[in-house]
Structures are given as C-alpha cells and as structure tokens.
Image (cartoon, rainbow, N blue to C red; front, side, top):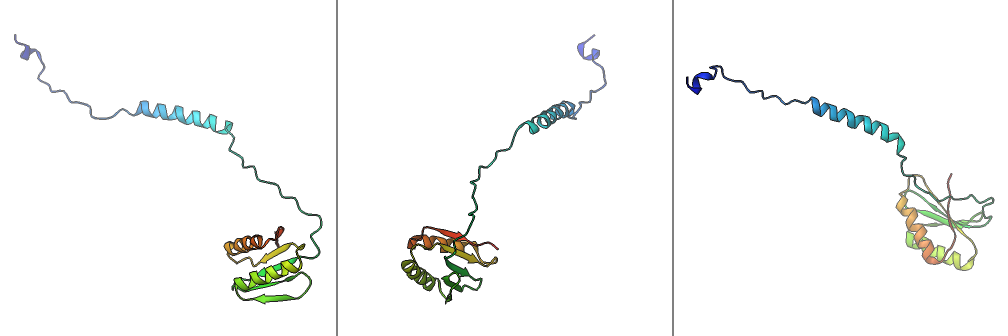
Length: 139
C-alpha cells in the first residue's frame, strides 16, 4: 500500500468564514467598562469670574448709543445728545467730553442687532482715550 492510497479520495473544503464571536465578547466587555467608568468621571468645570452688581448706578455718565445703520449718539445722561455720523466724529466728541468731565464713566448702549465687533472696538477706543470705567447697558 502506498501512502497515496491511504488518503481518502474526498477533498477537504476549507472554511473561509471569520469567527466574530470573540470580537463581540471583547466589545461587550469594553462597553460595560465604559458604562461603569463614565458616571465616575466629572467633567471639567470652567471657573468663571463673578461680577457683582453695583447697588446704585452712577447718576451722571457719558452715554454712547450705537445704532445698526452705523450712526451713533453721544451725550451726558439726562442732557442733550449729539448725533455722530462717523466713528471718527464719535471718538472726537468722546475725547472732548472726557477732557471737560474726566471723572464721568462711559456707558455704551447698543442695538441688539448690531455687530458685537463694533461694540468691542468702541470700548477699545474709549480705553485709548483714557476713560477708566466703561460699562455696557443691557435692556
């Protein structure tokens, strides 16, 4: 008898499927671990500064009203307001008012539809003129 005759004449068929059961077991274990660990971790909290409200707002202050169309009004609260058509004109009037009334703070009132950048630029230019106290009016 030869060795070739001992072999069966049947051909073997190879299995080409991947056994995914061990992968599913590992994924379930990982899922359980994440579900247990997730509530134990606390999210990072942001430490925001606290802003205290003043008990009484100042009675007199320089007020700038910014409009959506680009115009502005400037004046001392409770007195007459002047209209300023351009930002350079507004800053000139603010500088002259600050020179005549150096102790008055500045309050900026802006329309809710105005770009935030315009308000920030107005604050920055007011600080450049030497005004120490600048506030925003919210309605």
